[in-house]
Length: 68
Image 1 (cartoon, rainbow, N blue to C red):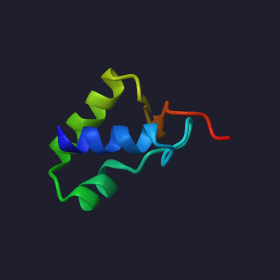
Image 2 (cartoon, rainbow, N blue to C red; image 1 turned 60 degrees about the vertical axis):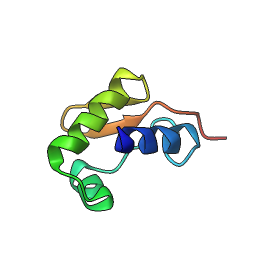
Image 3 (spheres, rainbow, N blue to C red; image 1 turned 30 degrees about the vertical axis):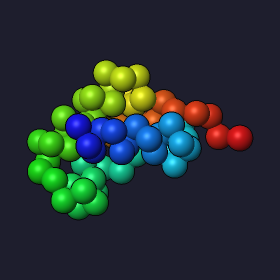
C-alpha cells in the first residue's frame, strides 16, 4: 500500500523520530487525498510492521529511530 510504504520510509528516515506523534487520520486524509478507511488501513499496516504504536485517546506514535 502506497501510504503505508511512504509513512514507513518517513519513520525509518527520521521524519517521525521515535516517540513522536504521527499526523492524525484527518491530516493524513488531507495530505494523501485518500479515504479515511484507507488511511486507517495504512496505520494498521504500520502497527503490524512494528513501526507505529496506537495509544487510544492520544494518537499514533512512531517506533522508529531514536532522535540523536
